[in-house]
Length: 377
Image 1 (tube, rainbow, N blue to C red):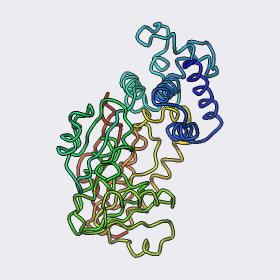
Image 2: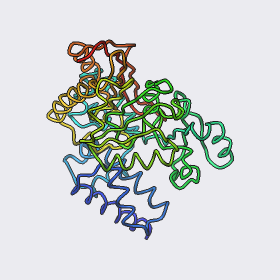
Image 3: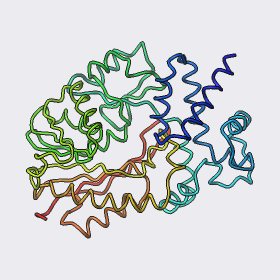
Image 4: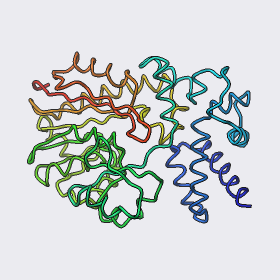
């Protein structure tokens, strides 16, 4: 009876997902909100299975002999041993990649490394938080949770904590008190590259809901200003809510057309341009995206990234710094863009760009580069 209940919801969700446009994580969250009768164990089964089927879709279809429906893929998944695949299965299929994704990765790193990255990106994503150093310390939280949860310090981020098992972190009283935020370790590492002095001004030009601004804020200790700009007013509303919970009081929110934007031109000490990208370094979290990518999408993103970087740079004062960041693994969005920026704009690369590759149980994939603006544009 329980198995039938689970499978009914599994197929209902997957068919509903196919008809929509939301990313997998958002669609799944919305489905659970609409079906509150589903218990914790069943939710875990639904999430684990839906993500596994999405990750390995190309392999399952290959073994079935054709592109199939979710019910058939599920049956195939239950009888497939990933450690004993036939040698006749091509490398791209063995690592559960779409033709577009595998081609793009192979162009960037070669086929052998592409297979390694695809396999890591088909693993479940780790659950990681960033401690809010404005309110507490990592040691304090780890001590508080020592006998309650299986958690450990992150290897690369000084404020990161990784949980070894899935858990509803947003129900924690510490979350509601603003003592931590859910944030991948790679994203925390990128934020650490932005180092404004106390009293300086920072513009987070593509801020989203403010994750990196929240990570940067403790180093400013409430002095100076953090400006968050995004073309999506609703997501800025979420950023405002998160800043309030975290106790960040030196943040201002600038939606499109805000009169303050023009007055900030050529005045920022720091600008963070965390640009829209393929998201290929984070496909553990949304494996559906590797089936949606295309050459047309890549060409559009490359154009947008160049345009956004130029606009973001116009806010940097002479001698100020700008950080270009993506959550992509593709050289077309990363190293090749750096080459273009250096040829096109009056900037100097401050240090070698930082490439963060996905690790088993570790960070997602990110890329970032720090520049200094040489003179006015």
